[in-house]
Image (cartoon, rainbow, N blue to C red; front, side, top):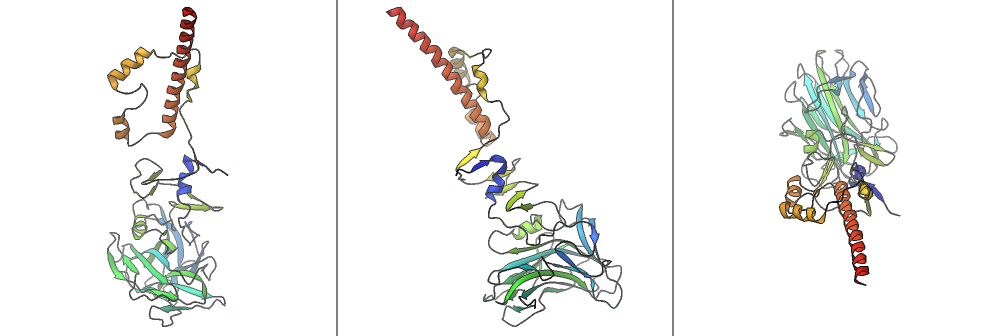
Length: 368
């Protein structure tokens, strides 16, 4: 069966293998307490989602998760678990996963920011280990104070396969310029786990004027199809609080805003730019221009061959067909429009041939 691929759907075709954010409950909506795919840590009052200014250009109307201390002896000062259920999402313990979130502390550096994960076995028991193989069933990539208040930081943590031999940590904390400001702790799964959730929280903060703001949480399998760190820094992560990115619907993947570059970041004014060859069984192009059957209408004025010759002598190309210089300056041709122009010239040639055939037959009759 032939696959008919319209130009409008090339983006879907080109992204058949691209990843989507495992944390599927995003983007967030304003509110408090739990949110689809996110389970609160603490009371509803300590977990409020509100519009604010995110870390990146274009995040002016972002929905942020605000953690606010209760000012009591409680250490549940806000935060969330990210998971399909409270026990997380299905995962393969023989693969590597990357978890990230943007975080900003305001007012003071009191309390601690705890950023980590939990991996669960079939009995819903937490089970994980450090890189040296030592058991650690309460794993945190980061425990501490963010370097400065009123500043966004991107926290990125890694969980590796159960049998991996990793000697160094890959997790990092980045500032807005992409500089590494701190290394984070990596972990490994145990072979028995089959689900994982992300988690981040504000812990033991006595100052009720403090807030911890969270934005754009992600979880990806590390397989070469996940967004790069640059993508996370620049807002191409499909995460919480933003409407940009990819949307999955019944197995189809859609890019609702922006443009897509494959092998290039120079998309110019196009929705899709590919630096390289593409292959498909069939291409269907939507065409706004008129299909040139008007050439056969009775009121169409067919240029004389003398006029065609004069135009070629003066301009070096057929009338209504772009010159080589124009094609180079524009960086190519519009496939549908050019096919219509070529068909017009073919139809004009057909009329010339019909007229010439009539003249030849008339001359033959005269000779007889």
